[in-house]
Image 1: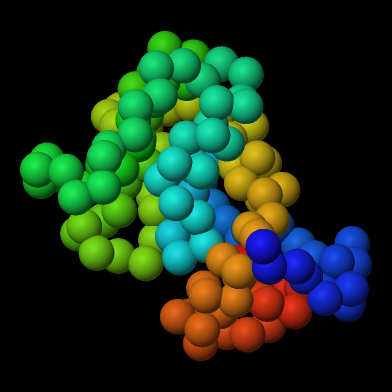
Image 2: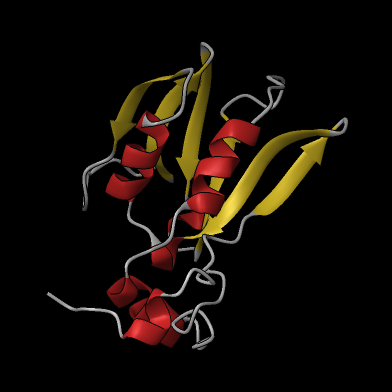
Length: 139
């Protein structure tokens, strides 16, 4: 098991950075960098949010050709975690139907508070060529 050096265990370590998308002054959707989190972990975080149900995670190397990695419902509205073009470095999280307008603040907050494990920050920092993340920056 990898152990973080003491300097990296300080409380300054920040959670994930999210790119918020607003519609009519309401948080409609957001994006996160997918090198710092797996679809399985996304599902785990979603399951901790009140009002989220029906979480389904697509299996790795699935024969499904769509870009949806995780599907779920928030207050009975169908939502998804989508990797645009199937090979993007981001996950887009929001409603499936553009006509559905709901507030994604509670889900966004869970991702902003999530701190990826040290090994994931190191790997992600190398992939994204941003080692500030390894030393306590925002993933």
